[in-house]
Image (cartoon, rainbow, N blue to C red; front, side, top):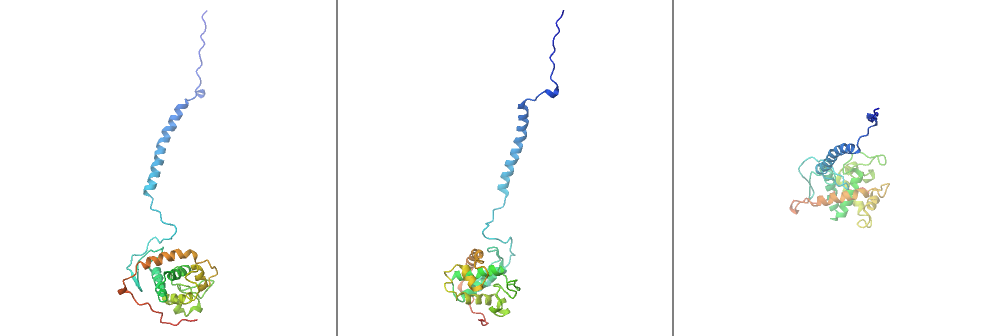
Length: 228
């Protein structure tokens, strides 16, 4: 009697297990191109990205390309300088010129430009604000500073500002914001502090654009009388 051979049953497809090495191979083949793409992307980012802009000084994206304007002994460029274009820089140079009528001290120029930045952004404003509806000009001077014409003339407004500033004892040794607050009477005595670094940059840059003495215009007081 013949013995019956036992046939081994083949495992069903559901019970078959794939070799773990086969799955790893597929995963590696997928990861290699992905890794290469990541590396290429990182390299391209650092090569093609624009140069970083210093964050300490705000900059204007572009200023109109115009010819220099002469203010006193300064040839004012198109800009930007510390983020300001020529119209604002002309007002800064005008403040510096008014300061020279009293003293050539650079710190005096920096304080005046600082105040004008904080009050008007170096613009000759024709309006005030809720705290001073009658404020006008680059220093936002109120009616007790003079006539509207005086306050709206940048040179006269600056000259009047310095007339009071130089009466502050220790103006050249006190913190700039303290000097400015004493003159302007701002509600916050530290209000002007953030604007001083920009004022220093503007004054230093414009002083570097001074004309030779033979081209300089004389510095004179304004043709109007100061009001007490």
